[in-house]
Image 1 (cartoon, rainbow, N blue to C red):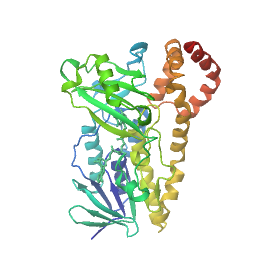
Image 2 (cartoon, helix red, strand yellow):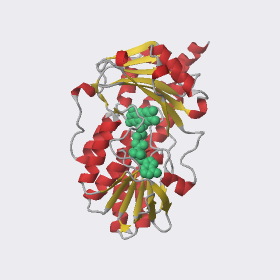
Image 3 (cartoon, helix red, strand yellow):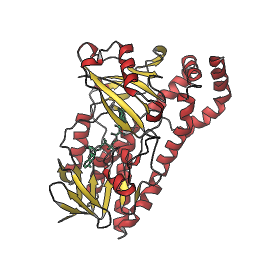
Image 4 (tube, protein in one colour):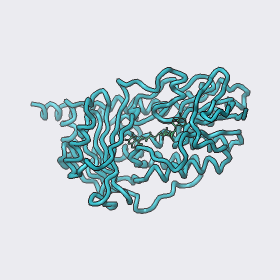
Length: 386
Ligand SMILES: Cc1cc2nc3c(=O)[nH]c(=O)nc-3n(C[C@H](O)[C@H](O)[C@H](O)COP(=O)(O)OP(=O)(O)OC[C@H]3O[C@@H](n4cnc5c(N)ncnc54)[C@H](O)[C@@H]3O)c2cc1C
């Protein structure tokens, strides 16, 4: 039996960050993923300023980007109609997860994490603090970090189910190539392409990522929303492989673990309920989980890891709660036309939204300004309705 201070399951942004931080602190770390890297991950791959800040803080250098991947033009639409083309938006970076996650995972291994990629987990025994791999190997831990994504096996071991279907989001995506390839094109966001969600076009060097996503409970037929969106964009999706995945669109876990078992990233539901951004929160929570593990281990009390972690996660939970409060103003069908109209008219609102998307402004600031604007937004919504 192999013994570790920390076992991390899942080597995406959350797990790689957690393993890197724990290994750098001198802990014995195992990083398990059922896939070998590089691997596919369904995602828009859009990196915000928030994600770049967390990356730099964790890994000690700026996230490397090809200048071509830097996007500062955003084309906003509502039901296909232009509501604002912003050419000086705060920079967003259009990456492929194939490359980015392999880089993150590489950082963790270089820091000393033991490489268990390509290994599936057969069983997690939280009482015995043991993880059994499908090949029969048994690994013992002091602290376990579940960073195994939205369908988390660790969350299932703790709570019986990884998420609540009534509160989860769902996204569909294609990678369009050929005639649709325009690496220099703007980022396009289509409000109302899905209910309580949106559609997106992210042009990249080797493909254009096109998708729709929104709350699952409000979108009985997401495939139909995707077909309609592709048709509107003039893309024949018949020959393209449409892939789908759950997205914890604001449905975060108030209790992100139990004792010596912590959940990070999507496994803890840490995705922005308005923009769908999850990579930045994944890296941040991975880092915080590793620090919580270290504090608990240094105190000789691994079972206190969760209380350290919950304290550290408070600002993230607060931000997600505020975003959930703001979300109806943007997505509630009765208010959506009013929001689109206000968006078209107000360059301040457009720039605020973009700063939000880019992770340059926090929800607390937005909420304060929104409360001041509510009477006007309400009036616009009423005018749009009657
Ligand atoms: C359609 C769509 C578009 C999105 N677009 C964006 C975007 O543009 N920008 C953004 O910031 N966020 C986006 N997100 C959200 C983002 O993809 C996630 O929030 C982010 O990947 C979370 O990182 P993670 O490390 O928690 O999980 P993941 O990236 O999902 O990594 C989990 C890892 O765990 C491994 N794993 C799973 N189960 C097991 C197991 N039992 N045993 C071993 N290994 C296991 C998986 O192989 C995987 O490598 C999007 C999501 C979707 C669905």
